[in-house]
Image 1 (cartoon, rainbow, N blue to C red):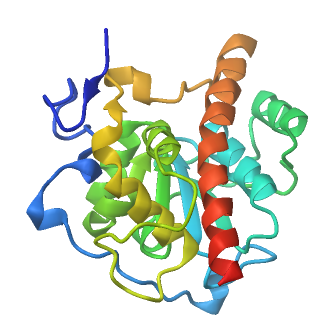
Image 2 (cartoon, one colour; image 1 turned 30 degrees about the vertical axis):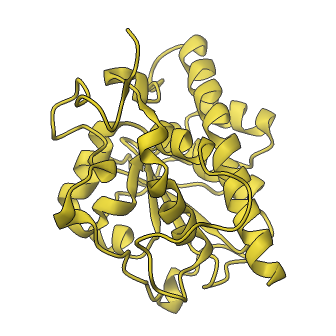
Image 3 (cartoon, one colour; image 1 turned 90 degrees about the vertical axis):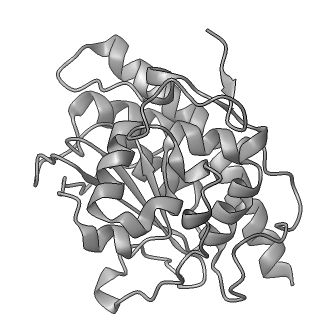
Length: 246
């Protein structure tokens, strides 16, 4: 089935799971809240407050979200952007699933020292962007912390938005705060281009859950996430480079 434009007819998903952070809802068109980070939340070796924070979410926090967390950390090394992950039903304290860790290592990420943790509202409040494995996870996060509506996305949906952000300085947007960090500027820029994106339908927006499944499912997970990472990293690094040069 063909995708349908976000500015046209509504997606097949119910309102609870549709990518509602892109809707033209005047009640939701509020500036992103600038965040302050307690010292204890500094969990990335090269984190800089002006860069921003990303939280990745899946269910158990042992396959999809740690894979994406560690790959983003690898690709964004030196930017000062902190990336962490958590699960909506986490296997707290567990290491990554071996087949996920194997694929992560092959892709250039490092699974060493990872332990799963349960997502909390405080975690969501303390980040600038939440990337979820599925739209259902997005719904769960927004219910947990409604103020995160505008900065929470299914990762494949956000990757589609990032594809449409042109190279060059970020355009003016609803984000008026002059002290916005790099991640916030990317979220703002992506929102400006939401009408150019054709919405994925139903499960096409979800990263496959390979937990307790076979090699093929883990390969598919890695393939989906590797594809999603490319435009996200490109736009984050582009905006960071341009802002740093000013």
